[in-house]
Every structure is written in structure tokens, then in C-alpha cells.
Image (cartoon, rainbow, N blue to C red; front, side):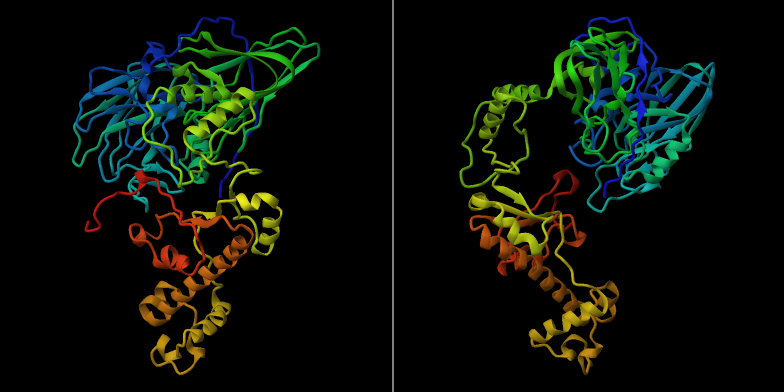
Length: 584
């Protein structure tokens, strides 16, 4: 289940007049310079660790991908795709200044990588007016941390799928009483006990909104507080009405809420997305309107706007010095579909979505061709879809051809997913495919599924007994000493495994047979109407834990022998599972 929390806030209009030219890119330290971090519009201070100034070579700003947990799924993203790293026993300090917007008791929260069963210690010191309202050790194994996937507050946690995705927040009870004005934050790395891991610091968040922090720890299912990470205060838009009637310029709704299509990994974060809605009279322009608050910092994404007439949208980036610098301008009518970066303040880049394809094609064509395209193995990958113009559509076709990607369109593709189609309506669904039915090559019965299970209790027992009889079993074969079937119950439980192993064994055998037959009922219908299709389902190989390396026979072998499925299929995120000899 995906939880969605959205609070719409009308964007304020900022009357900024100082606009300069923006360089193409900027390193984090070059962007920050000697300027203090200023608060976002909501009063929070989001401090990127890669912007700290190191005193020596112990700390270094590094790009996402050189850290421990870097992937394109689950809890493996870094704010603005960068971090500040130090080796296991490196000794040094790095500093940054912040401008505190108001007096208050601030939580000093740090997002970093906590390698499982390793120390990742570092100190955070906050100084203001000659005093240090906070000087605290973070990253110790014994420290309470905020964990992802509803684990809330724990010192350490071992994921069942492997020691990965260990990005955490720490500091839910770390306070600094601050006054308005400049404060200095120092990150210190030094010798630490073994076993020791690298110190990889993503960002710091200083906030007086303790109620929101507590709410997110309690309710945010992925990594709590991540929904607070936006580019608020960074990006602004100015809209000019080029038509003869009043223009309404607004955000284009994205899946999951807001106007930014999230890919971190998707719309799982609790967001306080602001809205974009401005009116512009003919021939006039708006002031600069803050829109960075609608943008994620954890991954790039599609970003959309729309206008009910002709308009020009100019975008600018606010530098650390407070000045606006233009980064892009677009003339449009109707929808304006953009592709934006999580680190806009560094990349200084904003493109139309079709440019992403053109840029990627140009990059791929630089690589020498090796080998040949597969001819017997069908490759299905959801990628660029046509619909953004003739040139773009040609590019989509070219890109697919380069990698022999099969068609996945819901109307013409040769792959279908029927998980949501009830068995009783499956034949009708297939008939409605018409001539396309002959072209279907792959059918998915579901993603990361298990086999159906029998009902529990008396109904399960009543259904199991006839199956046991069909196996030519007697009651005593199932439960030693049993004189009749009334003493036999359907019990595929751990308790039965210990107390009545025969009952447990045959209950599990029945459970497997039931599941295989339930799937076979669907497969038989599909094979009748889709004669050229392979039919399968995606099992996640992570579960159950005892079968991660040697799969369960009933769902990896027996189901195919009994023609319950015809197309083997699985997945894995290789970074999650240690690959080594099972003798370990």
C-alpha cells in the first residue's frame, strides 16, 4: 500500500529584480562559496553536506554513486545527488554557515549512511555568538536513528533481504537553542572503534517544527523526513502572456500528487506540495514566482505546467548570494512538459522532456557497437513512449530498435498483464483483444506474487480431506494413531510443524497443490485464446528467507511440470543480496 499525504499551499509571488547570467554547471562548494545557507520559505534550514568547506583532505564532496547505497529503487537516494564523505579513520573538519531566520529550539537532524554493524561516527557542533548550543556525536551504533520502512526509532536494524539501503536520519532529540543571525556548523571526523565504515553524510535539516518530525516518524512508511526534501527557494518562474485574453498558468498534475513526477523511487513520501496558479493579463509578465518547492531533491523527474493560451515561461535559479540567474526559457501554448534535475542548483539545467531522449541518443551513439542484437530472446522494457511530436516519435522508434526492445503499448504491444482480471472474466478479456491475441508473446499473472492459498479453518480442512484421499492416504499416514479423518485439520503452521509434523507436511503439500491448480485454471484459459504466449508470474527471490538461494520446488519446478505456468520469470536487485557460497 502506498500512503499519500498532501497539503496544498498557494505559492507566494516574489518580487526579485536582480537577474544575472548563470554558468552551465557549478560544483557544490562553488555554488555555496562563502555565503550562508538561508532558510527555505517554510523556515527550515536544509543544509547540503557536500557544500561544507573542508579544512583538510579528510572530508570531500562526492557524487551519488560513490557511496555505499546507490541504486534506482527503495531507500537508496541522496539529496541533490551528492554527499560529503570521509574514510573510516580520517581526521578532519568541515564547516558551513547558516542564517537562522528566527529564535527557537531547533532540531539538528542529519541524514547519512549507517552501515550495518559498523561504526560511522562523526560530530556535529553548532556555534553561535561564542557559544555551542549543540556539540554531539552522531553515527555511533548505540545511537537512536530514524529508520525506513516503518521501523521508526532503533539503534540498528537488519533488513531481511540483506544489509543494504541503510540510509537513516538521526537527531530526533538533538536540540540547539538559536537566535536570529549567523551560526556555524562544523562536521568533525576522527578515529573510531572497529569495525569502522566510511562516514557518508548527505544533508542536515534544522527545524523548529518538532510536531511535523514526530508525525513523519510515526506515519511516513519509507524513510521519514524525506518528504521534506525539496528545492524550495532555488527555482523561480516568470510568465509572460503572449495572447489577447487573460492567461492562467498552473501546474500540470503528476501521478501521486503535486506537479513533479517522483522517482525516489516513486510517490511514497509524505509531501507538503505547494500549488502553482497565477493569472496574467495580456502582454504583461508576472514577478518571479517561487516554484522550487514543487521539486524533489532525491531524484530527477518530469515537471509540468499548463496555460490556457500562448505564453513564455522563463526560469531562474537563485544563487547562494541571493541573486537570480536565468537557466531556461520556453515558448508554449497549453502543456509545457519539462524534465528537471534533483540538483538544479548545481546542474543549472532544465529541458523539455523530448530533449532527454535526444541527449541520450547522442550519448549512446558515441559508444562503439559490439556483438549483435538478440533474435531469439524477447526484451521488454518500459521506456520512452511516443506522443511528443513527429521527431520525438522517430527518436523513440530508433532508441527501441537499438536495443531490440519489444512493443509494450497497452493497445498494440505483445506483452500484457492480467493480474487485475478476475478468472471469471479472463476469457472475455482475451476475446476483446481481437486479432492482437495472436501476436501476444508474454503474459504476466502478477508481480512479486505468491501462489494463492486455501481458506483457513474448517473450510480449508473440508477441502483438504478429499485431496488427501485422492493421494490414496489414510488418516494414520497423516497423523500417526489417527483412526478417522475427523482428527485431521488443515494446519500449515509453525506450531503444527513442531507438534504434528505429518499434519504440517501434508497441509503444506495441499497448500502448494491448491495454489498451482488455481494458477493453472487461469493459464489454461490464456493458452486457449493466446496460442503464442508464454505465461508466467514474477516471484521475488527474496522470500521466504530460507529459500533465497535455492528456490522452493513447488513454485519453481512443480508448477511448470504441471503446466500451471509456461514462462519462467523472476527479478532481483543484486545490490540487496550478498552473493557468496552457501557454506557461509
